[in-house]
Image 1 (cartoon, rainbow, N blue to C red):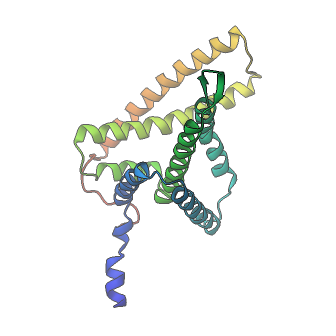
Image 2 (image 1 turned 60 degrees about the vertical axis):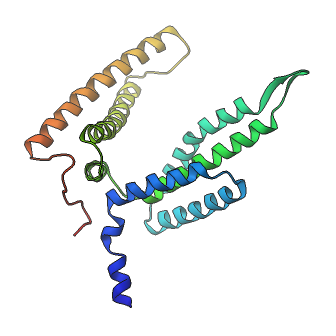
Image 3 (image 1 turned 120 degrees about the horizontal axis):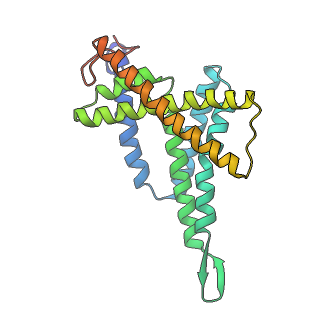
Length: 221
């Protein structure tokens, strides 16, 4: 019985490309949930599991907390937008809008916690290869691959540019100079990201890597 249990829960059951499928299906389930009490319980359970996983991996909590706060800026804007309406007596509270904002906030946070759990310790290289193993059209796979590559490159280049600008004594302000520098920064960021993405694509082709083929991922046997 123990051997049968081990055969059922093989390492391939948690393979990166299968985890992407689980995340997609779980996202569909989350989008269909509308009971607030159930969403609160699921958020609490996934948050506890995430905290335990971070603790066992000895990772710092602050990066996850920072990302969570940045992510919830959008939910804060939802609350600001949906919590009021213009009625017959002027501006008044919108109770149905507040319920909608709460529902969207719980769904978004549950999806974020689930994303961190199911894609735990999955780097860019493994994610790209996992996307290539999904049963999707080649053009759609290329779109996902380029999206992952652009996000990683944009983040890396933005950090380097921030460091260089701070080293030169640049300070952000509400003036014309700041708008001019920001426009130049965005243009340089896009140009450098495009060049690096093309270089990475050429390097992968030279090494014989083909997206969509059944290549082994790290951690698989």
